[in-house]
Every structure is written in structure tokens, then in C-alpha cells.
Image (cartoon, rainbow, N blue to C red; front, side, top):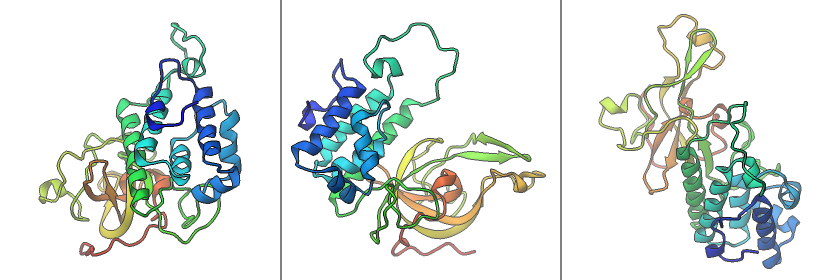
Length: 283
């Protein structure tokens, strides 16, 4: 079983069973019980314990949170995240060690781009670095549960969270489509930054990309629908908000993104603190 960072990169014969066994071995090698791992990471004992007998690849955020909380370095967690991403990209048969069928499935596979996998990995690595700097990384639970951990417990600590970019526009009375213009980070909490010299270049993102949010603030109110289109405002997928998140990219750059451009479950502030030293945009 793997014990060091260099051993955790996926081997040609790596399987889900080996990944889970190595994960459990990490806890045992450090003398950490399920109860202690739960207390340190915020995940429940059940969620962590189920990894030992899971038939599915554990959630990346659970793996990152637990391994970080028991003392693995950022480099070690990075290698675990790489191994997870590589396994996640495999067909389920190959992931479990079985033969891979050459006959295409009649059911379309979920669309999971290489960009999404890579960005999820980088978000996990960044989260490890944030933890090392004195914060605790936590995948957010449902909106409105401020201070509640993924495992269901509560905490008074401020925790950066991973949020998902949701670059979709509400059209007509019920339609929802990917916007043709990609989301980007802004240096100010104002709309149309590409025309106001506040766009942060080379930060364009499509739906599904994960970023780490550290705080929230107010700014221009934005919408994800056409104000002139009949019925769009009443579309159940429509969103309107003046709330913005400051997010940090894996390369260290940071900027703001309106919450109308993040997944619905990641809206509402997520219990994040107000961004220090930020002057909100004028109404």
C-alpha cells in the first residue's frame, strides 16, 4: 500500500479498491481513528468509513479534506488528487479492475471535460495550500447552512469553499443554455468589465470549472437572463444578485465573480466573511 507522495500517482494497474485501501492505510499509519478524522475534517465518521468498502470513487473534496486534516503535506495531497482525477477519467469497468468493453454504451456518458477534471484537481491543490496557510478547506453544503460542515457538524471558523462556475443563461419561460460568452474574473465588482478595463485577462471559464472562494462582497446587480426577453424574468432558472465572490485561481491570481455565474447550490454567501478593504460598487 502507498505511504508517500511519490507512491500515490496512479500506477498502470491502479484500481478503485487499491485507491480506497491506500486511503484507509493513510489513517492507520498516522494512528488516526475514524472519530478523530471526522472531528478534524468536518466529514462524518460514516462518510469516511464507507470509503473502505465503497464501490464508487470517493468524492475528491472528501479525500482532500481528510488527508489534509491528518497531516499530509500539500505535495502529498496533490499526488492523491492527481491519482483521483486519473481514476475518475477511466470507464467504470477499468476503474474496478475489470476488462474495458470496446462496444459503445447505448447510454451517453456524462460530459466531463479534461478541463473540468484538471481544474478540480488544481482547486484541490490550492485548497491544500490555503489550509497550510492557516485556513481549512471545505466543500460547501447546501446554501443557507452557514457554518455547517459537509459532515453535518457546526463550526464558528471561516472556511474558504470550492464553488462551481455556472455560465448558463435563462431563455424564454423555461430554457437554460450555456452562454456563448465565457465567465471571467474581474478586478472590480462591476458588470461588463471587458469594456471597463477591469477584466482579468486569461481567466475565462465555462460551466463546471471549480474555483476556491475566500470572501463575499456587494457590487453591481447582475442577471443571467435578457431583460428585454418576454417571460425570461419568470424563468425558474433566472437569477438576479448584487452579491460577488472573491475567488483564487491555482496560479495565485484572484478576482471577483458574480454569484449569478455560480451553481445555484453555491449561491447565498455560503457563510463566507465580507471581503476586507473592498469598496462595493455604487448602486
